[in-house]
Image (cartoon, rainbow, N blue to C red):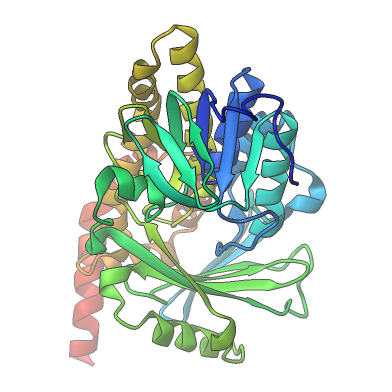
Length: 402
């Protein structure tokens, strides 16, 4: 993919620097270049490259990708899955089908496709060239090979612990709000056809869950949850693999930190905007970040174009923050719901209700599909609180009576 844009080759001066070429960064570079901005796309990795991620693309994320790419992503890139099985602590909660599907992809292919689209749109290629230093006040990025790139605006899209977020905030996210996930690519299941179910296991990790995502070439299996509440995530992963009767593949384990319900209310500083994981825009309920990454990268590029076209680059962060408000509001509702699903006091009541109510399972999948928003789910959950509390109490008392 090595190529250089038609501008900035001599002076390395651009309109927009994008640090990180995952979904958020690629979306920012693609949208920015499509609007006529001189964009430099920087990443320490050359693409294609591997990336820990279950690879589940929700309906909301797929629509965002389609809008960015100017059409539905290629069929070869995404496999629809419309059958789902839910478990809690190893016990079945129910199976559901006939709901909005989740599309399965690999980040190797998905991210490379987005980067290729951004470069085709005109972004200058600085992938495979790690950043040595960020100067957020210019803004500027100095690469390890000595190249210095400057622009009036920068998008930091290199993750929650990436170089841009560290340059702005110094300390990493609060461990109580930081998630951690482990994952392997196991061989495909014998019945990994179009009807193979996606499996979700509540309780496979504390304040988190386990997943088994069937794909044509593999099965992505992992566990994730709040890092501070899982002192031995490897043990949780071993237990989950044993539950699924998968040989212990610890040598092939991949791990990654993610902001799990901790978003930056002010998503940047000065001429720097944070997008995707770097801005903490990860779903606190599901850990899914692709949809928010694509949307926030697009919003950051649109804010940059609006500010630069008006001759006021310093206004970009204000435009961007305004565009993010609905997403922030949804994340606040999701944080509230996470306490119902994963918290110790009402968790048993939620699990009992989830087992008994096909409607609750259906609404959960509609939320993943983008047909319901978290505020809709939160209002319904509030109406259920008395019943959840009663079921939680009954569940705690039941063993004592036996």
